[in-house]
Length: 115
Length: 117
Image (tube, rainbow over all chains, first blue to last red; front, side):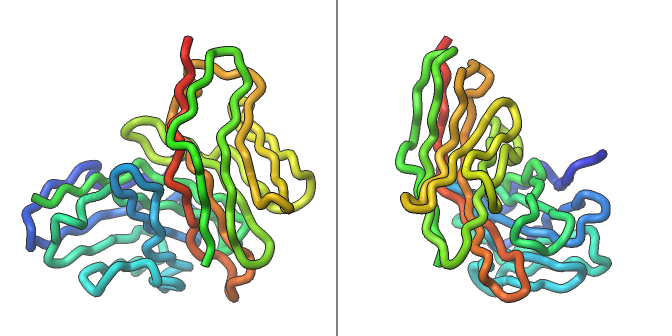
């Protein structure tokens, strides 16, 4: 079946602009995660959704970052007033249920470049 | 807070030789441990996980990992390396004690595995 998909694959924007990154999880997966991977680093957790609600947003770096999942499937990560330090690959993952033992399946990522 | 250390930025192995990629962790409660592989310009692919039970876990592409509770380690291994195994490998941990279950994975910085023909 289809895996996790993310659009766009690449996004170039200017400092101060607003961007939206989209994630389509594996069909039927109720848990959805966003991570950020900076160059030379491992992914860092941003936010976790269980269904439509954000169950844990402790990884969001500041209030410029926001994510939604209004119908419990597709999720959008929104970044306001982008800064050069936001440049990274943003990864989305999904898992079948909200269990610590579930495997998270990752999408290919969106590479965000802020000029 | 939970953490993962991958002490080697790069591991070089000749094709056909056994390989080991090291990982140590720190977590409260029972650890749930994962290995992922990342190929250039692609997302993370799941290799294997340890939840409970047998300390030797077998995964995809002939990889296995050994959980050692006393040494808080979860090293990735393969008996005979292939050139196609060359990639970036990440170890990750999730603690099992948080109320409500799943929070995010905590990843190491990654280890570049280079298999020389």
